Amino acid sequence: MKTIDELLAEGVAGKRVFVRADLNVPLAGTTITDDGRIRAVLPTIAKLAEAGARVVVASHLGRPKGAPDPAFSLAPAAARLGELLGADVAFATDTVGESARAAVAGLADGQVAVIENLRFNPGETSKDDAERGAFADQLAELADVYVGDGFGAVHRKHASVFDLPARLPHYAGYLIATEVGVLKKLTTDVKRPYAVVLGGAKVSDKLGVIDHLLERADRILIGGGMAYTFLKAQGHEVGSSLLQEDQIPAVQEYLRRAEEKGVEFVLPVDVVVAPAFPDLKTKA
Image 1 (cartoon, rainbow, N blue to C red):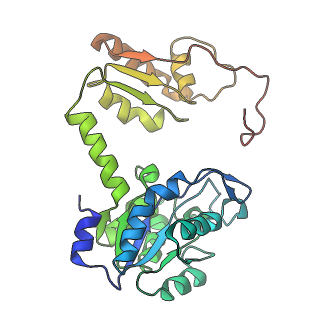
Image 2 (image 1 turned 180 degrees about the vertical axis):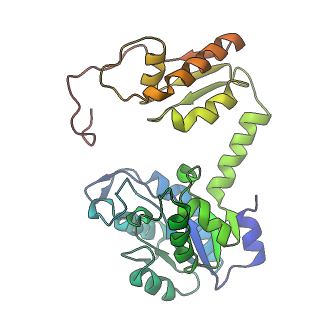
Image 3 (image 1 turned 30 degrees about the horizontal axis):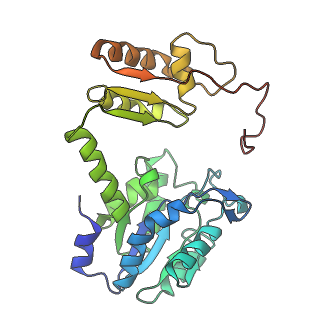
């Protein structure tokens, strides 16, 4: 894995560097309620800018349906990034259209631009390789080099994560390099007792991780929406809670293997019960 330090050593002055960040910040209207993800990618962006790169930052935000939706605009994230950098950040109102091309063309060495939410283009998340590849081709026209630093999205087969790096010289940003280093420590130099906490909505997203951990962990704590699939697999009723019914056999097999290996699965012992939860954006 090539890292950003290797890229910087090669020289980036005058080069257009595409940074795939994770600016998927929580919003209350247009107000960012937690800018942690912007701060996490800040060292990569700042270092590239200081070295004279023309930095093109791209990210997704939320789950728009492959079309522009003002509720999921990256404009607030771009503004906050500018505040944290202490410099003007250009914002393109599209992903690969006229605004994006103009924003990138207008960059001078050391300047930064953010393009609009990648998921406003259906090619970003398409399951069709040709459609996804076509979008990646358009993104590649905006840059000379690719830096991946969106750790929260790096596992997805999306155009900006999977297809674009294959089209450009590619490097890992500081956040990715740090996280990979942590993962290596957790898989090659395990210190015991070794307990792991897993959360998220879908068990299916974590199958490979759980399979890997069953060979290493002493205890696995399951939280988030995925806990209901585990509880159902144990025979509990979960009402209309989030459930991946098709994953129950796989979860039952993991529970069986864990018992064989002496790995303890720790699941929630109580939950808050309500007759309905109609609006997913409403705080429970």
